Figure (cartoon, rainbow, N blue to C red):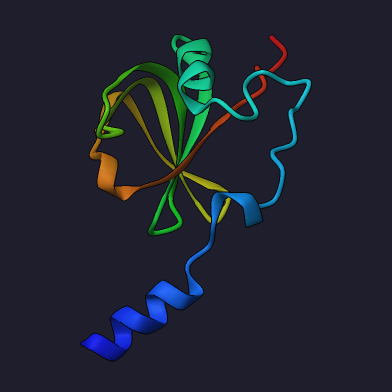
Length: 105
């Protein structure tokens, strides 16, 4: 245990040795909270750890990434498998949330 602590102490990174933070022109690129607030009520893709995609309108989410969606469609390997009115997804299953461009009417 003492050897591991000594190794960790010797190899820890100092704030002075970290890479400089690059500021993006896109305000959402470095602020996930702002991104999530901006996509509420908009079409999104929610990718799960299992590889399944859910596409629909983001109704709400909480700090645990629990998600409520409306007009939800379930996709496996890019193929539509099911349609749901409302869907609730537990946050620990979520790999990422991405915006979805609206389909032309």
